[in-house]
Amino acid sequence: MANKPKLLSPAGSMQALKSAISSGADEVYLGGSDFNARINATNFDRNALIKAGEICRNANVSLNITLNTLIYDKEFKSVLEYVSFLAEHVHPDSLIVQDLGLAVTLRREFPQLALHASTQMRIHSHLDAEYLKSLGFTRAVLARELPKEDIDLFVKTGLETEIFVHGAICVSESGGCLMSSVIGSRSGNRGECAQPCRLPYRHENKYPLSLKDMCLAPHIKEISDIGVTALKIEGRMKSPEYVGAVTSVYRKLIDENRNATGEEIKYLANIFSRSGFTDGYFVSKIDKNMFGIRREDDKRITEKTSVRPIAVKKRDEREKITVPTECIIPERDEEKTLHPSKQKGFVLRFEGNLPSDDFFGKYAPIAARIDVPLAMCSDKRVLKYAEKVSVIMPRNIFVSELDHVKKQLENAKKSGIKNATISSLNHITLCENMYLHGDYAFNVINRETVAFLEKYSLSSVMLSPETDGKFVRFSKCALEYIGYGRTPLMHTRTCIIKNLMPCKNKEKCYAVLTDRTGAKFPIISGNNHTNTIYNSLPAYRLDRKRELKKCGVGMLTLMFTDESEKKMEEVIKLYLSGEKPKFEYTRR
Image (tube, rainbow, N blue to C red; front, side, top):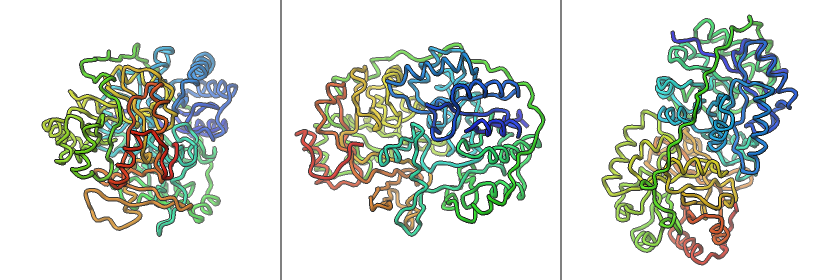
């Protein structure tokens, strides 16, 4: 067996912290009153944080503080003051960070503090490890969607690896959900998620987005054998009793190096579950059995179940963390980039079906760029304009898909395609010798993140739909923003379309999700039945073209999903005129 994994438990309150420690946690994670992804938990004010630090040190339990939200420019001063307080008075063992710009800033200003890469950073590949190491991260919290094989490969990179083993899981990839933000003005990337995935919809299956809770208790031995550093329990919104009971079960399984018995799984389900548990991602069995809701029977069982934590002995002395001495960021290579002066106008982006040859012939010549999913780049209509085409890389690429993606990329390059629209740092390695364009999935909402991406020789960067697009003003990269299009709200590894209608195993499936108000959200499938759910209304900002240009935004993307060619032509004409449309739209 490899080294025994550490057990990491949540603490949404002081009582939950004490319960986690008394039940055997090696590490705990908690947040202050601001800047964390569970802003609605009780959390800890500054006096409570100081006390929490003392409690953890006395118990030899590592303390990880969450700073796992996106940070606006105006908040940087406050964040740095907060981290200064943490470093001086709380002495955390690590900070858990999502925002790339913040991570680089913290490594520069607080080199003595260890950083953990949050699952909100969308860590889906072992190829991410080298980038995270170079930035000075000591640990990566992997995306919940990863199967066992990908976790194993990540462990082999030598970077500390943390995985979720129990608790709620989002149907959308972590860090990639804009649904709550766009339709409810409550950003999941800012800790305010309204959980639209748990709501009923107008379909025979009323809860097509609600996943069961994860439970990997039946796999503890193989996870230990892989060599994962830390096993994480989700639950900063849960009660101290829940935290204590779940922690005590996993403590016993880790210490005895065994998988849970049927009785132990039943006990965990009785504490809290949504129609039972799922291990679908871990075992690569992604199907309808992963979905479930919190039933009345589940609630009644919980009320009857004893959830007293099991007392355990005091933990051993903590290992000292070695923090990297520097943050290694490359210098921008202008020879590998396109100058902003060559990237002006509108970008045609097709995420649904491709338009006709006639449409391409009319509008491709006047477009700044043409973005097309990698899987569609072999189409003859696309290849006629290869010099302008940018392949949209799949958002997450598992090891089982890697060879196929590499082959598709190689074919695209041979066909004369020289641009790639990327959404992850690991795509830089895959798209070597191509002009790189940063997609909206980088969640760029501050100048520090733009400056960071500049260093990696990106030719352009798209600003997040969660901004007004006016915060940068200048960049060595061309700045891009969605001028028209249905904002992509969720990217799911599970197939939502199968929950709504029979699957015909087509290469490109399409469906519509209808919510309680009657709003209709298109869903388009990608590789291996991954789905993207789009907003019911298109965002429209083309009438702000001049205003955005003054702020440095030189390109506006026209994102087409289910529009007819007639509608596409109407949008392009609106771009050219800068007028407001006659159709219904939103600003988000």
